[in-house]
Length: 409
Ligand SMILES: Cc1cc2nc3c(=O)[nH]c(=O)nc-3n(C[C@H](O)[C@H](O)[C@H](O)COP(=O)(O)OP(=O)(O)OC[C@H]3O[C@@H](n4cnc5c(N)ncnc54)[C@H](O)[C@@H]3O)c2cc1C
Image (cartoon, rainbow, N blue to C red; front, top):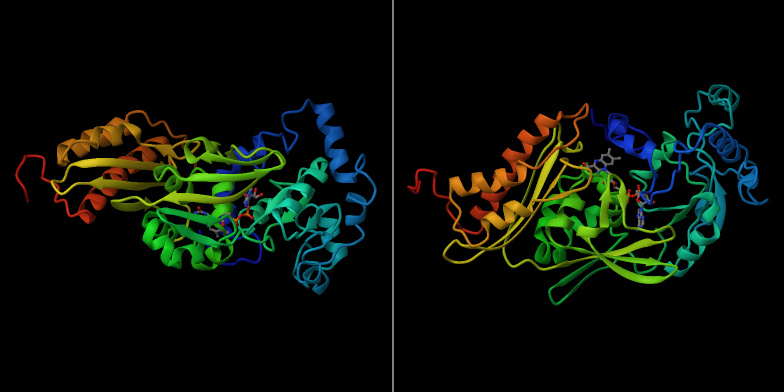
């Protein structure tokens, strides 16, 4: 079930908890660390959990202070603290019907929903990387739109001890079109990108795919960079970035580096971002052809079971010159349909050649099944939607696909 209740965890987030299972096993931010201590031997884990809960071993003024200075998220003090460092924990529950004593009894600890965390809202990337380095022992994370991270924290699937909020960082919310290169700052809200004329002109596949991400209120907060860095294998934007050969700009203590999408997504909720690094922007080079984004989802706005991002460059005779195709929801990362691309390039596609091009990719898929779709279901959906995406993109390029018996319809 999907809900637009953004007060915290909603039913969609609960339904998504199964998809987050890899986060329990591995790092919450995808950098490979064991944030939940589940890879440790039992005694080391007990000590680790004790340190996390009590703040033992953490220098004074960090964790200990958080438990005494706890403004709520609605507290004007916190708003006034934008740009400064503060210590915050969200109250649990927010309902005035349950008092602090009752909620403490329920949780057996301090009255709050996520674990306590430190917080800073700097205004420059230099400060961001400095803060991440300074609070390295607290397993810090950056906070973008909070649409994935906050529910994870509320479920305690992620327990960062320090959040560095990116919302006031200069230059991260820009969209620039320089010649054929579209640069989108990591903090550009998904709804802003969806409406941006530069995105429509240079990356229409992205604009189309964004309409499939959640609902508009979620896209008003959720960011382009947050979706890419979160690297949910079912998400739309990673598949778009992969199909379009997008490039990520990562800023960290060692400087700036550029990583192609093909190397950025390395596992479920896991990216090439190193500890202390931040995704600052994503670049798309204009694709001179047509596009299609299609996906299968149970209800509008919910996470898709599987989706396909497709870019085709077709000449006047209907010959495919270039193809960029990627699927979501059928592997631990978005999956590039390289075999399909190779099969299409150089041909004037008809029903038969499209079918065999699709099978070339589907034959090697082995998605893990879950409550949302079995392995077989995901493969069947991938087959149907890969075909559909190619046909839609060809249709938009003005190519009429000949039926399999060779006669044009
Ligand atoms: C009800 C609901 C439905 C949703 N449906 C969909 C859907 O259908 N499809 C979909 O794709 N998403 C969906 N989402 C998730 C949404 O798209 C999020 O916006 C997105 O996943 C994360 O973006 P964010 O800006 O909110 O990031 P946050 O939640 O703030 O951060 C997510 C993670 O990325 C890291 N991070 C964020 N920005 C950066 C950065 N610049 N550099 C390095 N690390 C960074 C954070 O530390 C965190 O680990 C849904 C969310 C909700 C609440």
